[in-house]
Length: 354
Ligand code: NDP
Ligand code: GDR
Image 1 (cartoon, rainbow, N blue to C red):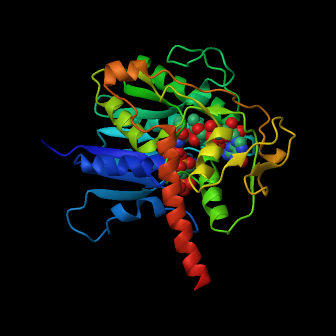
Image 2 (cartoon, protein in one colour; image 1 turned 180 degrees about the vertical axis):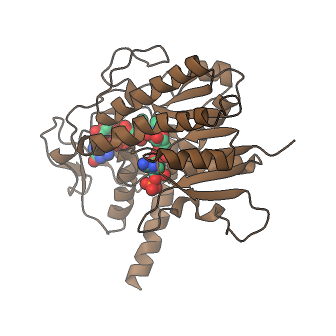
């Protein structure tokens, strides 16, 4: 059978890095879109990078940007992908309040530009399209657990941009018969998670504090609840969605929810620190550890103008139709992230001390 070709936008991000590995292992030719940057942004895919001079390559990187429509047309024409995974986005919810226009352009209109590229090139029947939709669409709680039929109520410029992307996928599917699907993915994390998302911020801080490299962790809303899974397992779900005969929309989630506060406790317990919470309210400072030293403090700057309080997904449709299941519990996820962050921090400490 001829090798299949995939085009991944957002290949330098957490999910892009896991998905590229997954597809390469499946024997795909993988093309990735990376942004031009003044410093390296390919750290997550270093180990699968292939030099352009190597013969018989199956991994290719191209410069591109979701805000540049003609670039996307050229890339789709050049790569002739069987499958496109649109993972690129300004993906930070809080940052979207600072950059709402850019976020709308990249995350909302960027998806439209990709779909238009397929349409302009008359590749509607040749190319399947995966859209990285999000549990942030549910926003203000309407129903729990959240499933494919739960009404959306987005609570950030990011979520509103993703709402546009979600519906343009549905519209192009219905209008032009495209094989375009939404994966409504709940939070998924890993050792490759961006450092400013709360889980990685916590695991890095717990590792750094335990090694004496940091004294305190500042956080915002500790009461938010998230359905956290492992990114490695979620990229398999993305692929399964595109292997279905019919395009459709699917929730990928664990079905369990955890507060930010409990995530902190789990991370610190991995390094033998028993966090004793002395405060409950959002104004309360001084969440102390066993030693009596204050390790975690609330900083109002990390609160969002509008928050998503509770996410808990119902993955029944993905389980029954795709045969997809999560495997890693939140505790195992924390352990995995802590293990890797401790490794990195110890290495950095040795270098610094030397
Ligand atoms: P990351 O933030 O780790 O990665 C985002 C990727 O998009 C990076 O490669 C980034 O490039 C790229 N990118 C950003 N803006 C542009 C642009 N204008 N043009 C081209 N590329 C761009 O996100 P994740 O890997 O965590 O998430 C992948 C996708 O899934 C995102 O769309 C996200 O919104 C969505 N999602 C994520 C969930 C999660 O829990 N992780 C849950 C649900 C949805 P660079 O490296 O140069 O910054
Ligand atoms: P989220 O992830 O907004 O769910 O979006 P994030 O890790 O940023 O926040 C989760 C929750 O933690 C609270 N929080 C903090 N968050 C950050 N980043 N920093 C802090 O210091 C902090 N303190 C508390 C937040 O208020 C929030 O309630 C992620 C992204 O990957 C999106 O792209 C994706 O669509 C959704 O997950 C599903």
